[in-house]
Length: 492
Image 1: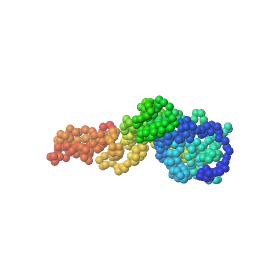
Image 2 (image 1 turned 120 degrees about the vertical axis):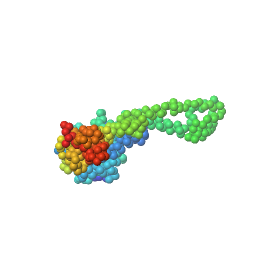
Image 3 (image 1 turned 90 degrees about the horizontal axis):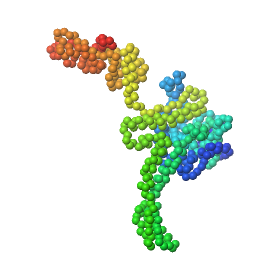
Image 4 (image 1 turned 135 degrees about the horizontal axis):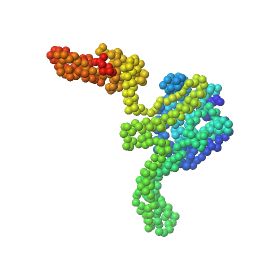
């Protein structure tokens, strides 16, 4: 069913008398005080009432919104690495700019806030009349949406309730719902806020009590005992003078002076007696527990070092950001893309992995790949293709030096890429011509092996002429050089 764009859609005047199911009404109706309000609206208001909850929802929604997305065409092999990126498509354009007032980042952030607070995210699709392709997409407050169950089809559609009470029916292809499954209601999501309502109450009321303590509220609190009966005028005068002397922050904790034999009886419970520090700490722990959030995730960096900080960052991405991204990915691929018909066949959205790389794992992977590349080259494979075969970046190969075969120059290049020596299958060996003019250092160094070309050429520049040769002092040429030793120990 085609609809005008959303701005006009929400301003419609016709009233639709489609009843809202009982289960949906109980999920979105109700009232009461902050903590006892179990409605979706009450759950969303809780974010601005409790600092710990605000920090958690703000951190998770921001992290989810900052991840980049791409559109791919699937490969026949089914492997991700074989996909090709699609840079131009109507679905990609709308996802990058869901509506004229929201870029993707704000759209995802708003949607994730709804999800974290109510367990539900609702997207309403807007189209021009007669056009099936989605043109706009809007995040809608969960408390204004209600699914309409159907005995045969499971779900007939949805009803949106506008701020003025108008109920507007929506078709199945006009709404996309993301939800954390509710074990008691297959149509609605489940919010972590519902599990911590008493704790949120405690956090808010303890903060208000502490605020009232500093505002004084006619402190000192207690009872004024008067031995006799006071007339109305005496009572009014005493009450006004008491308020004038003791009410307000500036008059907090002043000593009370009474007349007519009145006696002050202290009835105050101190903040120490209430143990507010411990109480608020326990509340913060309960809120974090409901969301599965560590202290470091919301900025508490006590007893942390670089290694644990990297581990915490990786954990947050894997356990908090990725699950939210997966729900969005499923909604895009299985509900949004099919709305574009044949043009979306074989396409899929995917996100950039938010998990930071592990430096130790990366280093070990590079070393293993370099060793594999060295072994392939030694076996005779073309160096131009070996690097890409083992997943290493391409590097320039200008050929082997005149004094060494091709594998040497290539192996050294890989060693330079990693910044470390590679234990190759072949090594460099010193070969000396032992005759009457061979000096003692050259004779002693005969047969010595070097791990790689760089070390060998330090002692034998250009492959010959020992730097410690004594014969050159007397005008005799050096009698030794370094050559590449084969796997069986023979020089090449």
